[in-house]
Length: 318
View 1 (tube, rainbow, N blue to C red):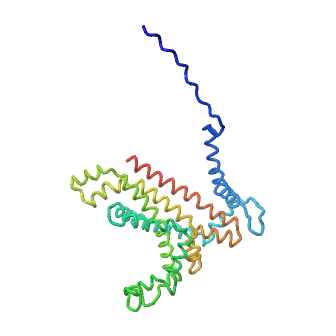
View 2: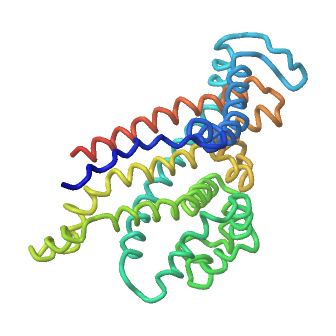
View 3: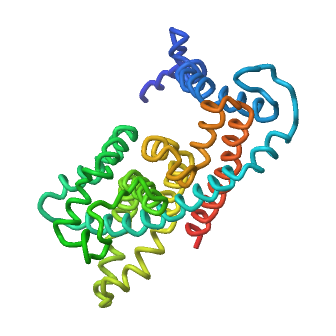
């Protein structure tokens, strides 16, 4: 008979030699810089804006006196606030509808194989990587009242000048008239947010199973039938995410209006809530009313985000 095998002692759990090797310590230490960053650059300004919005603080008198909702009432009673709110909603709605349509078209085009696809993807993504202030300065030159290259192109193809579609003038004066100035603001917002929406929708298209496409091709489903019954239903949650990002970026942006039109022309025709909060609070010196205007953006965006996420969740369950 063979000798019984020796009983091996149970392996003792290894104890980290250094305190940084412990998961319970290393995790919080690694997250600490992120927490500090969010608290310093998001949390503290938000709390300070809330305090200011319920007070009557100004640049000249920084004593915080509690006045309740009186500051909000004053801000909303201002006609410019209501005009800025209307412009904010209008610019956001129109730009995101255009972005959603163009983003789906570009995503479908970029999902196909063709020579130079990587270069085209890079060029489409380039506006998103460009600093928004630098991009708006470029648009300021493109929409110049005298030397606009867009006007020169319209004159060259016969759409601008005497007896033409856009009138007898030699220049459109994009930023000198209320209608064209509003169109210019929407155009820049579309140019800025379209690349991100295209990338998000392109990722959603590539995630559609190839077996589903092959089955549709075998059944004889054409492009539009596949678009209506396969691509769009499966892309609805992705579309909701793309629209949510676009709404947040457009709704809270003041750079486009500040650099492009400064709220005009004439006075306040392109004003939005973010720019009006800056003009009222910083340049006007009324910190309380400027903070109340800025804080007004928070519940509106929270409601939009909750609605879009609920729509995306419902689309996923269906």
